[in-house]
Amino acid sequence: NWTTGDILDEQIARIREQVGDARVICGLSGGVDSAVAAALVQRAVGDQLTCVFVDHGLLREGEAEQVERDFVAATGVNLYVANEQDRFLSALSGVTDPEQKRKIIGREFIRAFEEAERTIIEKAKAEGEQIRFLVQGTLYPDVVESGGGEGTANIKSHHNVGGLPEDMRFELVEPLRALFKDEVRSVGRQLGLPSEIVNRQPFPGPGLGIRIVGEVTRERLDLLRKADAIARHELTAAGLDDEVWQMPVVLLADVRSVGVQGDGRTYGHPIVLRPVSSEDAMTADWSRLPFDLVARISNRITNEVDGVNRVVLDVTSKPPGTIEWE
Ligand code: XMP
Image (cartoon, rainbow, N blue to C red; front, side, top):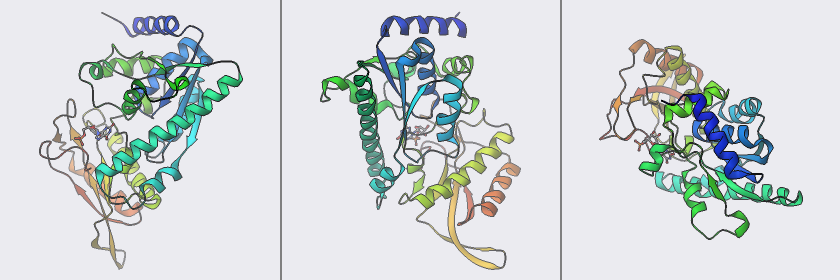
């Protein structure tokens, strides 16, 4: 019968014991697991920790700010931000195949993260210190059946295999290894993390890059971010965040359809709403959202987002459809 307070004290004691007075590095993805893991380590060893946030430009509206501003304000953590939007956009230029996009995003992410690590290692060296530990937000279910989880999972396997220079091989600190998701959220709340981060629904590592069917461009990302922000805002306002497992909002960038708006003909893109209910994302059913909510989202997106003239609702379960479109 553990309470959140017990978990907190126990984990903080363990981290202190493992890390001693060494330096620690931690990647933040914007998701709840890496945020709670980082906040725990920060609580345990303070300024010995440096966090890295690779901003790939594929997050949703407000999410980069939630990390760079709100998370830092709540924890006082040392944060190194790598602004890599241009790098990801140029690597993705001309690419439309979903698996290709995933590979490119994963590869660039690891490279960008390693470059950031290198900078931090050099800075520590100049201070006569060495980075010895890497924090991972591995949860109990990830331990049991590895696979799934956040976008940082690829960093983990990457750091476990050799091939890296000796000063970039770290011991892992995994303060969430014994916890389930709801326990992680409750530890996050206890640590005073922003509720947008603590209560965030699952979001894929490759981000909006796999929610644009077609080539990823800056303009399309901006458009999708606006549509997604409206859909999320209305879902929250309707009080349905807990009922809906996640609601991908997808831009069909390669599809155009004829519409009429004001007194003119339009030839715009459809936005797909993909609300699903699920226990574990392995199977899912499409959520029977109230139709007045669907109508509100549709009206707002078509009125407020230039270039979108149609909103469609995905009514496919998983299987046969996956949750994401790519
Ligand atoms: P699918 O689309 O396979 O998604 O039904 C199942 C769950 O996994 C998430 N997802 C990903 N998460 N990297 C991730 O970290 C990925 O490449 C990825 N693809 C899908 C998806 O959002 C859903 O929760």
